[in-house]
Image (cartoon, rainbow, N blue to C red; front, side, top):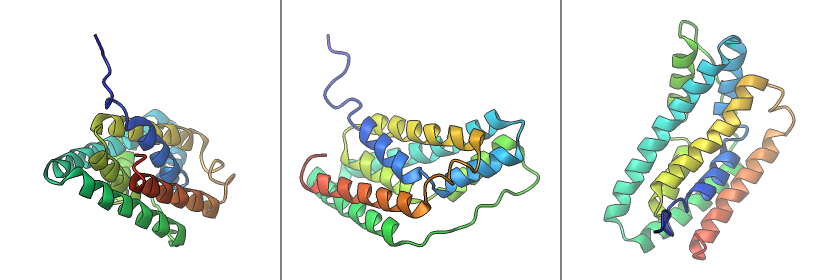
Length: 194
């Protein structure tokens, strides 16, 4: 008896890699660092709030993409997805995104981190990447789990270590590598490798 079929968890590794690279040094990491500094005695609540914010966004992205995939032919979906990845990659490399992240007073650590992540990441490149991957692969659960694992891996040290992590690697390098990865994913889709 086979427990795992060929399609189960095929989206886990690509989603993990793509989300980890696109979120490294992103606003959400800066927000986690700021929240971790503000709520010094409540790191667990900050981490869980941020993770729940990401989980909600990724869940909605995967559901939306799965519904769209039911009505659009796979060949067309892969072509549009590949183009979207290339466009997002070029945008990341060429953008001058330096938006500030602020933490408002009056909220508890869980609610502050949940709302900050949920609202700042809504419509962000990472959420769009999760949608595109979920729509083009046969594995919405793997895409969801891989994406969530990636942000958990990045958010945990951001909350606990703070600003020192982001100072080690220049933001321009992070953005360039992320953009190249998005473009590579798009080319791989066009070539039929994904």
